[in-house]
Image (tube, rainbow, N blue to C red):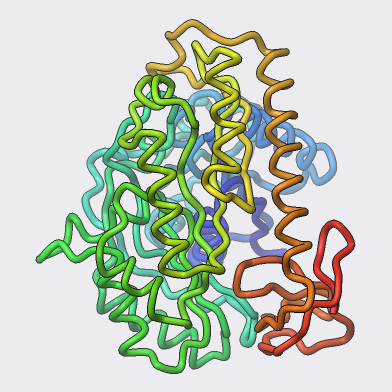
Length: 423
């Protein structure tokens, strides 16, 4: 065995896991499991810890390295676990020299009872100012959908969010490097490219000339005409620029699907979250992009049970699903993260948080069912992901039978089973 990886959290972590495996194996590591952790909720951290304990019970001969956002924000906690051999920082995990150092350290530590402090290799993430472009060669040729990291970190300080302390400040991959990565992936047969980052719409602020995300998408589509489908992952709608709106309106190769960082439908809660938009701005943005691209599918992140949230405030988040015409919802029960301002605010009872999250998920399910029903009789371009499933331009799942993965097929929707469209 060489290196295995267990990934928690976001799409960016999924992309970075591919880089981690490549760099760790190039550094000569073997018989090692890497945990690429997430810090967005306390539950995500707990899941990483549970996974570490389970893996060590099942495979005691293997060495365990923990990295990712939770390793960056809570290195001492992971280092204190007897199952863990090494804790590697979030920037270091992408660098080959850090993995070569890790290999030397692991080879020198024949026992697990080394001091916890000697296990930690976590640098100051706030001191990181650049991001190196990584072309993931490990993506299988012809894999339908692949990710390209164009940005990392975040300059904003939402009161509930620990991620800037795990990812550092915002930094961007130069446009030319992104275009080269996209071109290389398209030449390898990948039909859909997904641009990903922590705060995607902050792209370019640290680069010469301060290009924006819209300019980047235009450059990709102009210089890689062979790309069939370009998709954008989660954005902060308040930062959407004119070029991005122009591409949404006029470029069919940009998929009509956006996921928005809304978080709440109540203005006072948004203010206490230190968000940069109000309820009306969120609704107006959704109406604007729907005018530009009438069939667009919109998703959003919404937190249930943020500190001080009353029932009336929560009701405004429920109403936001209808008011913004949302199809997809990522529901986050509020999770108290030590060190964040929200952790010091008056907390909502845990049972109330769970109940509100349940109601919000039910609202989301009803919205999804309405969208599935609206697709009947419509012909869509479906990217085949496997022999049994594909995705429309709007990211709706489609049940298929025996199709070739990687192909884009024109299919007419005849129904749905409550989960997937059928043809």
